[in-house]
Length: 230
Ligand SMILES: NC(=O)c1ccc[n+]([C@@H]2O[C@H](COP(=O)([O-])OP(=O)(O)OC[C@H]3O[C@@H](n4cnc5c(N)ncnc54)[C@H](OP(=O)(O)O)[C@@H]3O)[C@@H](O)[C@H]2O)c1
Image 1 (tube, helix red, strand yellow):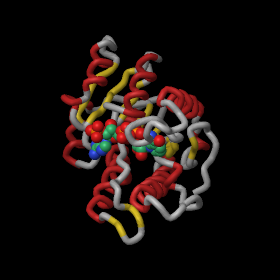
Image 2 (cartoon, protein in one colour; image 1 turned 45 degrees about the vertical axis):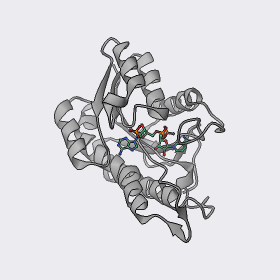
Image 3 (cartoon, helix red, strand yellow; image 1 turned 90 degrees about the horizontal axis):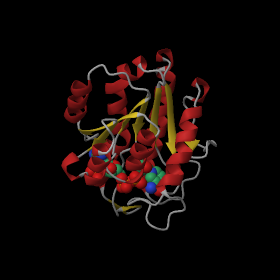
Image 4 (spheres, rainbow, N blue to C red; image 1 turned 45 degrees about the horizontal axis):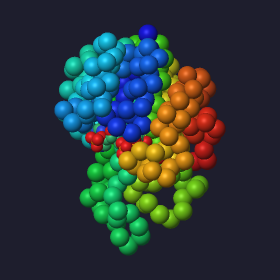
C-alpha cells in the first residue's frame, strides 16, 4: 500500500490530493495547521475506514514539524507532498512591498518544504516510492518573470532552486525530488476563474508523480509532465 504525507490538506489542492489518493486505496497522513477547523478533511477521514489520519502541522514552525516527526516515528513514506503555501498578500509590487509578509511567505513557501523534507527524509528512504514532491508555481520561473508578484514569485523561485539542489544532494538516498506546478486551479488561491478544477489538476499531477523516475529528479515540471523553463 502506498503511504502519502500531504501538507496543507484541509482545503484546495491538498484536500483533493487526500480525496484522490485515499480513493485509490493509499494510506494518507493528511496534515492541517488547525485540524479542529478542517471539517471537510475530518469528514473524509471519518468515512475512510482508517486510511486517512489527520495530523496538526504548521510548516513554518520547527517545533510543529518536530512534533509530527515524533508522532509518526519511523513509518516508511512513499510520497511526500509539500503542498501548503500562501500567496503573500497584496503588497508585492515595486515600491509597495510588505517585508514582514515577504519574510513569512519565504518561511512557509520555501523553508517549510525543506523543513518537512529534512524531517521525513529517513521515512522516505525507508519507503518504496522515494518521491519528494514540492507543489511550486509556474510563477517561480525566473525566465517568465513579468515584474509583478515579487514576493510570491521569489518564494517559489527559491523553492525550485533548493529542490534542484536537494535532488542532487540526496541522489545517494535514491530520492526523487521534483517541484511540480499544479496549473491555474480553482481554489481560494487560484480564484473562481482559474482554468482547471482541483479534480482535473490533481488527477493529472498524480499521473505525473506515478511516472517519475530517478532521472526526473531535479526537473521543474508542469502538471501535464512538460518541463518549465527555470
Ligand atoms: N491554485 C492555483 O492556481 C495554484 C497555482 C500555482 C501554485 N499553487 C500552489 O499550490 C499549493 C496549494 O495551493 P491552493 O491553491 O490549494 O491554495 P489554498 O486553497 O489557499 O490552500 C492553501 C493551503 O496551505 C495551507 N497553509 C498555509 N500556510 C500554512 C502553514 N504555515 N502550515 C501549514 N499549512 C499551511 C492552508 O492551510 P490553512 O487553511 O490553515 O490556511 C491551506 O490548506 C500552494 O503551494 C500554492 O502556492 C496553486
